[in-house]
Each structure stands twice: as structure tokens, then as C-alpha cells.
Image (cartoon, helix red, strand yellow):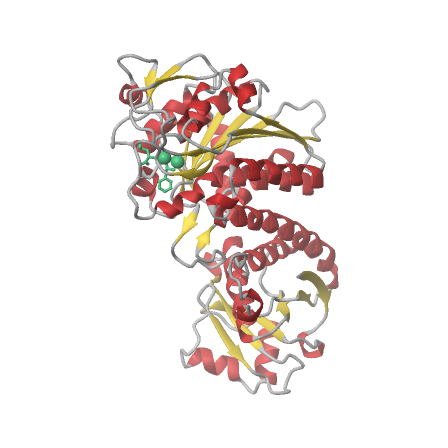
Length: 496
Ligand code: BES
Ligand code: MN
Ligand code: ZN
């Protein structure tokens, strides 16, 4: 699919479908007004009768029947102007594009005048929202070709001000790149666990590294042993799949210190010996979403040529029960030298992350960000609308919050007070790997905090956000690709 920008007027523009954005509770904008006239007042009548309410993402299809060169017109709501945000535009685009695909159009045009945003931001939001909203995971549908609604071929952003074209083009390009990385992450997360093993993830990372000129190193089991990664190896001990530790570096930041991104990459979380109930266990293929987000963000950093030094670290393994699996009662020695008593083998994410965080400290990073589907408790705390955020550095937490608001991948902070550490004290080891039901998000983060030394650190718990059972405006059911756009924006904001 191509996305391009064109200067011109809708009255002169031939297209299979034109998207006309409308605000709620306000007079039609100039372009919509002219279109309405050409259609004999059809749009204003629809709105006046209440048959179409321009709420964000609401759509209504019309046929101009020769009164305009466009074959179809799609009205799309932007909601109230006073509540308008860049994310609302992303949502509107994410609804408009797939509904025109269902209608049968393949070359569509979006009227961009009168929306009233910076042209670059507008271009980015429309392309990002469209690509994300059009996402489908069809790889395992055998009659894909027959079933498939035809893909869109082009989206043209039309503007009457030729001066806006260049900036809009830049935004369109960035938005498409960023969304493609999120799509890559969604594909990885959607894939069956047998087809997204640690070995396959390592191969995937190699592909990305080759394509984007990144430095890549994959540590094997014996190297992990030499480094003393007893926590990662403990989790991996039940699996027939060999674990991997992926180190991917993007170095375009001169002498700047590294930014370390650490992603939980459990390719399947059965719970191990503390096995999970059967219901919904299939969803535990999404337990590598943190790693996918890190790969997506580094891909974006490279594609957008950010002048930064970034290292991505992915501890990758399955969590499986077997005769060789680690057990409740075991004590694992981490790479840091600290010991962890295992009370529940299902609290495995914090274990593999403890070794990865220790490894991150070798870079003396400016900041460490980890991202993980860490706790079921996160959805109890925040529902399915926010990423849980904890950490040790206010400035970077603020930068992350701001990135969340801009991208729509919103974060909400929880406290990391000293008192919570009581819950992870062990009688026989330096700490234990679970802290009971109360404050599960926080006690998991408390354990992680023991492994970041003095480095500024932000932890993101995406457990409630990696998968959606509910259709959302630019996020179809299934893997969301959460974190890719958030981390990308967080990185971009270093260059400001
Ligand atoms: N991967 C899970 C967390 C999770 C749960 C992600 C549901 C997405 C949806 C994690 O490894 C886990 O099992 N956590 C346990 C921790 C508990 C044993 C302390 C949990 O949240 O139940
Ligand atoms: Mn688990
Ligand atoms: Zn897990």
C-alpha cells in the first residue's frame, strides 16, 4: 500500500472513495460545505436529522452518483473540536480505512483541510492510524486469497494548501514506518508459540539487524552459564527449546551514553511447574510482547535515523514444566550474585529480567527502560486501558508519560515505596520471587529494582495491554503491538 500527499480540490479529484472528516456540534468546514452543496445538502440533512453523529470514528457511506468525481464518500467523525487530539485523528483514520476496504474501494483519498493540526503531525496520524487499523493476521488462513477483502492500494492525503504538502509527506513517511514496526510486533505476538520459539526470534532479530545495519549478538546457553545468568537459565531449564539472549545495538549517537531497552521475551508461559489453568493459556504466547516492542522500537530508531546510542536486550525462553524444570523451593543465583527463592515458577518474567537488567548495567546507560507482560495484577489495578509504570527517575517517567499521551499508549504510575519491599523478603535467600496477591504489580517491580544499580530506570508493565479481546479504533482484536510507538516516541524525545 502506498500513502501519498497531493495538493488539489475534491471537486476535481477522481478517486474510488473520498473521506470527509467532520467535527461534532459545529458548522461544516469549507470543504465539507462545498461537498454538501454539490450533493444538494445531503450531508447537512443527515446531521440535522440525527442520522449521522460525527462522534470520533463514526462513519457513514454515501454515493455522490456523479455529482462529484469520487465514486464513494465516507463521512468520518472527529468528535468535538474542544476534545480533539492527535489520537482521535489516528482513531478516525483507523476506522475509515478498513471500512472503505470492506466497501470495496482500493484507492482512497482523505480530505485533510479544516482539521487544524500541524501538517506533519496530521500526516503522521493519518498514515499511522490507517496502517494500524487495516491490520489483519492472515498467515494461518488457508483460503486467505478467497476470503480476503481486497487490500487498499493507495491512500492519498488531499490538501488545498500546496504549502503544506512537504511537511505532510514527512509525517506520512514517519507514520508509515512507525506503524509498520508495530505491525511487525503484532505479527510476532500473533504467531503460534511453535513458530515463534527463542531460536526463531533470534533469526528474526538477525533479519532486522541486517536490514537496518544494527549490531547483533546472540548469546547461547554456555555463554549464559559463563556470565552466571542463573535466573534466565533456571526458567529455561524446563524447556526443550534452547534459550537465547539477544543483544542488538544501534549506534548513531557519537559519544552519547546508551539508552538500554530490555524486553521480557517468554515465547510461551505455561507457568512451569506452578502450571497455569487451561483456560486462556493459549494467550500466553503473548508473553514475548516486551521483546517484540523493543525490536520494533529499535527498528524505528534506525529507520528514523535518530542520533542516539541504543541497546536492546532480550532474554528469550519458554517457561515449561518438565522433569528438568526449576521448582518452587529452588534458589536461583542471578548474574548480579544475588539469590532468589522461587515460590512460584509462574513468576518467571522478573527472573529473566533480573539477569537482563544486570547485563544492561554493563553499558553504564543514561536510562534503562524495561517492558514486560509481567503481572496479571496489572489488569486488576488499571484495567485494560493503561500500561503500569514504576521507576526510579522522575524526569524519565515524565518523558514516558508525555510519550504515552501523544501516542495513545498511555501509562499510569504506581508507587515503589520502601514498605513494599517487606513483601519480597525471603527467609533463606536474598529475596523471593512473589510477594503475595496484594500490590502484585508493585512487588514485581520492587524485585526488578534490585538489579538496576544506580542507573535511572523506568519499568513498564504491559500485561493488560498486549492483547485485546475488544475491537478498538485502530487496534483490531488480538495482538496490539503495544509499546512500539510509546518507546519510539520516548526515544524521539531525546533528540529534541
Ligand atoms: N506472563 C504472566 C503475566 C500475565 C498474566 C500476562 C495475564 C498477561 C496476562 C506472568 O509471568 C505471570 O504469570 N505472573 C503471575 C505472577 C504471580 C505468580 C505472582 C501472575 O500475574 O499471576
Ligand atoms: Mn508467568
Ligand atoms: Zn510470564
